[in-house]
Length: 194
Image 1 (cartoon, one colour):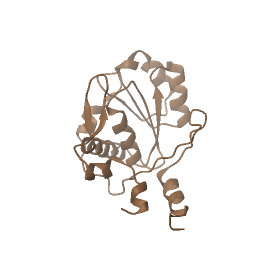
Image 2 (cartoon, rainbow, N blue to C red; image 1 turned 90 degrees about the vertical axis):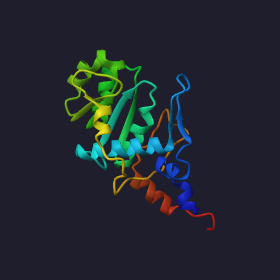
Image 3 (cartoon, one colour; image 1 turned 45 degrees about the horizontal axis):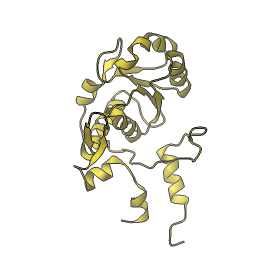
Image 4 (cartoon, rainbow, N blue to C red; image 1 turned 180 degrees about the vertical axis):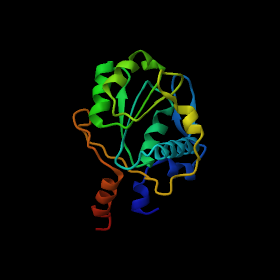
């Protein structure tokens, strides 16, 4: 494996190398998702987003409690080339609406955990074009599981594979980085032999 391949860390890579290895284990319930399952679900989610006209440079926001679907949603948005914002389910409706509006989300995903807040969030975020609920019904939100299950499992032809970017000051500063920025950065950095 060359240096460039070592830098690619995304479920599709691990699904090819170790498909049955657990990618996610929920500590409380013991529920697991393998790398193959994670990659397949992320592929379906990326296809759902593409079918909605959501793609590179668009924004997806989600406000969920600790759920196994969380990483599949994040990777699905990533595969589609989207920015995504994970919002704490402990925030108030006003705080959630502010973040959804501020990030320019075209898609918002939540769960019944926030059902009491959705009317207020919806009223404050009219620019959101598609709203989904995971894990049960939420008023005026489509069923995420049904929408995802209707999608093909094959990766998008132009799927964004992966790279992550972190800063040591993440709580204060989180860079808004797209996969294009990461590819440019990766191609500009010196290799071990230089």
